[in-house]
Length: 161
Image 1: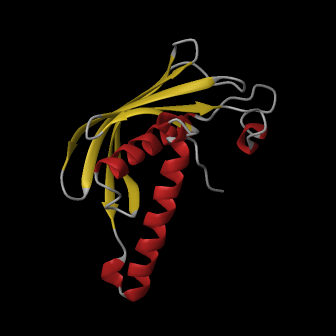
Image 2 (image 1 turned 45 degrees about the vertical axis):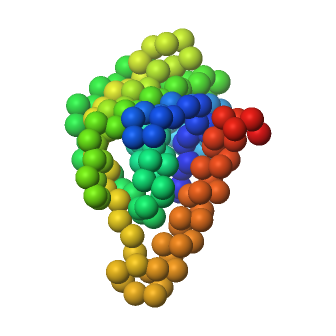
């Protein structure tokens, strides 16, 4: 199962920060198991939403240089209130530091009532597949095209679309 947890990017400043939103619907399949009588967004998926927001900031800041971005390290994770269906989680990430292939972020999620859902610091690692040969270079190109198209959808409202 693959998740795309960021539904909309509401603002961003290159190399600094990004604001995004996740709208939690009852129809999301993981809610059937977590927990059937008290459906809430799993904490690891709240963290994943912050990681996705950070990956979007890094992609946009670096002109989509890294076709593959993975989570390398997580520190200081703190969970707050439950995220229940019908609620919106606002995610804010700040770029703390970066070098060629890693970037460290601080992320925070709050529900639509302003209560904290999660906060964490994490490091992402970016890389390409081109060094693995022609198939890797083709995969990099496809991934970059995919990420740029998805970015255009997520920021559509920022550009007045």
